[in-house]
Image (cartoon, rainbow, N blue to C red; front, side, top):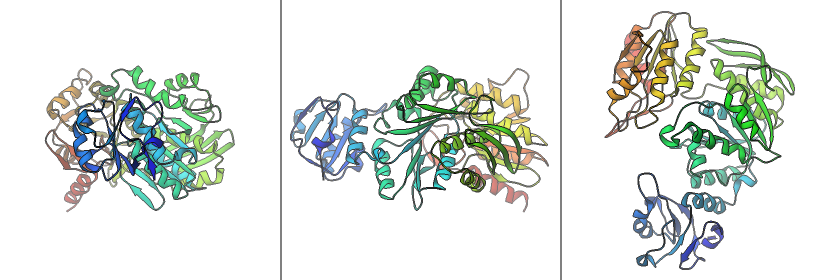
Length: 486
């Protein structure tokens, strides 16, 4: 049994009313999910303030309320604690409730604009070759024999620490997780003791949240500032931002990339539609690798993962075997159809990710490169023209369509994209209906062509202003190909 006074730190408590020696059976920030003797954290959000739902939380059995607001006189029936920073308190209290799991479970954090999901999957697989390893990210929270979905790349602190405690009980020896810039800015990972951090890339995204690129970078950098002298940083040496991070480090580090100065680099490599083969130079000598993952950028992800596990002491022969067996990550450069032409579904939704995808397939495509993409509504608008510039630079034909329009007019988003095309570029069409856009691209594909469907990857839904509907790029491709071959 935990008591409120145990969970509150001195820095969290400004004032309180009531008995602090009250039992707490859980930490909850959603009033609808509060159960008997839970502590309700009233979070002031960007749209709504949790203070509006205090009565519901108390009605559902909350034994205490923690809020940035002072206790009102009409809520004396439960203990009320006022804090300076509600999100900071949420992380600290959840961590204490679940007995500080990162003190016994080594945690690797992976951050970057692109490449996080694949890199986390690779590191988990490589570490799992020697010991049971848990993972958290866009595709869910899991370890062998256990899995649950996530709504956020990096979940809120109570979900994070609950899963980490579950991983400890299950005997996991490691945890590798995606760490988003939003999670870092919103204090979700403040109380995780990271033993290692991996930097994959940095490019324009999320400016709807961070406002400036410098704010965005500082959020990423904060993960590496958490590392102590005994910890490790794994840095993409090919990315200019990597050098900025290295200058701020107080820990040991290893670089990876195609540069001859990188600690882990390819001596030779070859890309094909079957995957990648390479020989890597590493501080532990040469490592020959073979992987089913496609493209140059996935070799970078592989090098990030290899670097991460080398400093953890994973045997070279296990690295080779685990990479050879590793399947493509769902929604990341997945082949949805192969035959006369190839159809690939990928999550690329930034200009940098789109460029990486197009460059990779430009190297191995015999025919035309046909691209289907859009941009998410109610998100960073600055990347739309940049995505268009990348598309017209590398693709032979572009079909501009909808992603998740959310609160915006799909046609307005498409107009933002097409305005970014280079003057005189006419090799494109527009179709706001994503299903029709994909089908149009498949109809024009011929022998030797590659159709790239970008933006949604693993997602099986599409978000509109007034509804969310089931939508899966893979299902659309399979349905259309059945029709074409009927």
